[in-house]
Length: 199
Image (cartoon, rainbow, N blue to C red; front, side, top):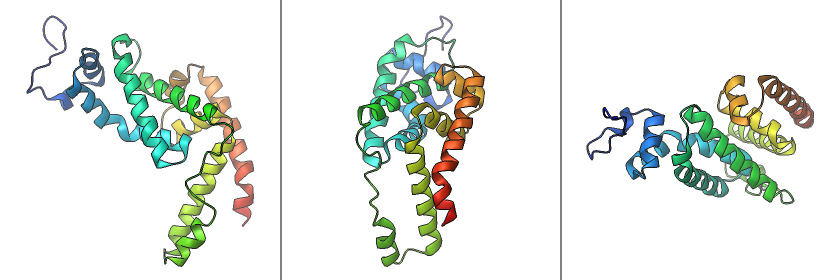
């Protein structure tokens, strides 16, 4: 940033040295190199959230692209009062919630058919790996059954390791509300996973 408070856009600028906020200021000026650097930093994290909500790689990739397009369009409206990552996660969360509402009457997990585990066993995949896959599938299916905001709060807590305060900022609610969402979400997960644990 120069003495006039403008973000530098010289060709040899080391974008990886800039803060997220400074990168976003450059994105607001439609600098594509800055946008690519932001994507490099956050694409994997956003993809993880999208995958938790969509249940398959193709939809997760599409959601991730859509989310970053929204970030690009919204960059000029970003205000420094909001931390960048909470602003980004709020955009991602809202988009994923809208996606699940749009496909509410369709199964969320169409990418892993019931015969996957037997077929994998026949293919010679080790038993421990099969159990790990089965557990992951059970958790994802259980997450799909709980209310959207509970699922989002649990996803941010467990998979993104965000604090209650940061989750509250993303969801636009109080810390107490986040605590309630997570408590109810965990209770629902235990209920839905009980049959699996008894096997």
